[in-house]
Amino acid sequence: MFDRFTHERKWVGKGCFFVAGIDEVGRGPLAGPLVASAAMFSHEVIMGGLPASLCDVNDSKKLSEKKREQLFDILNEFDGVRFGVAIIEPEEIDRINILQATHKAMKESLISLGHKPDHLLVDGRPVPSLGKAQSAIVKGDSLSYSIGAASIFAKVTRDRMMGKFDLEFPGYGFSSNKGYGTKEHLNALSDLGPCPIHRLSFAPIRKDPQDELNLFSE
Image 1: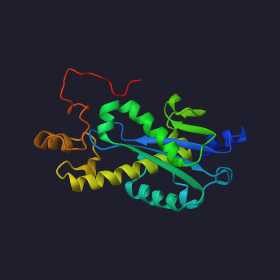
Image 2: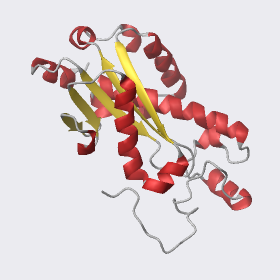
Image 3: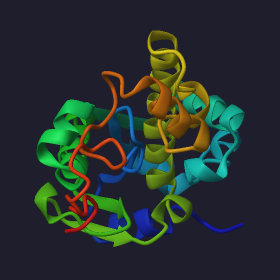
């Protein structure tokens, strides 16, 4: 089995005692918050390995909802990991754009972690604004237990929020589509218009159809 602590052990071997993984969910949806999480396993866990109950930790998108929920609950009770979570609401996403919101959420999740890591493992591209030594790992949530755990924390936190929003703002199917632009969601937008958790700067909700701002660009 592939050792998904390889990256963590590399940096521990270089003297970085505390290594944290960081990931986010919710960049693409038309509604709901963006959520970032940082997860940091203890030195003992990194060197000794995860217990059997957590060996399925992986990219949250590769796990069933039931498995994500199960791992989330086990991780929350596990003494060998710290985690921090940050939430950026739709209004702020509209105000500062999705890229800046992503970076802000990541930075705040590190503050929420409560312990400064020596090195970061970031899923995808580097984020210099975090102001920390870091390694950017493409598909890192599948290659690092730390990033995978962060992706689970972020995903389950956001999904649970969307489930509550579905009760508060019925008709959009937020429990099933999680705010993404599915056919069901787009039809509801056409019939009902946007609700308070929609991102008004995102097409097709955005009022100015000529504004072609790429919210995902650097």
